[in-house]
Image (tube, rainbow, N blue to C red; front, side, top):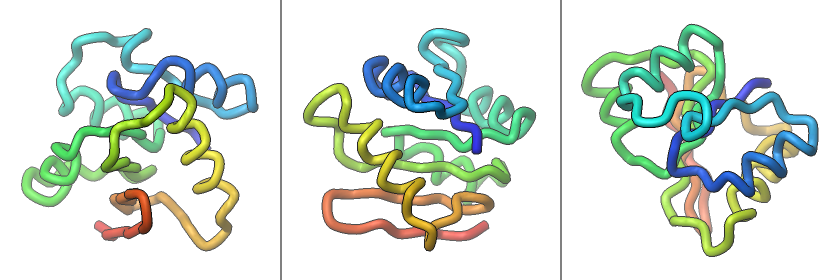
Amino acid sequence: MKFLANENVPLASITRLKNSGFDIKAIGSDNPGVSDAEVMMLSIDEFRTIITYDSDYGELIFKYGYRPMAGVIFIRNQPADPFETATIIDKLTMNKGITFERALTVVDKDHIRQKRF
């Protein structure tokens, strides 16, 4: 599984995930300032699951027809500490009942919801 961390994902979490063996690219380091549509296209081209705190990705999928086949993980609540995103991704990937492909996965404090596309 490959991930693409949006610019709003803390660098500390990206580093922790990389050090844990995750294949993750960081928009903030590799492509700063690109549009959400460009992030989508990179995700599609490289089959990477987007990790973001930006709710616009749901609109890009369901209103504008983008289809990032590896999926999008939208975390609703801003992280309380810079490592929180890594902890969330760790837990999600360990849950064998969750697949990210062709889905918008919405994570909040108490729930995980998925909408398939």
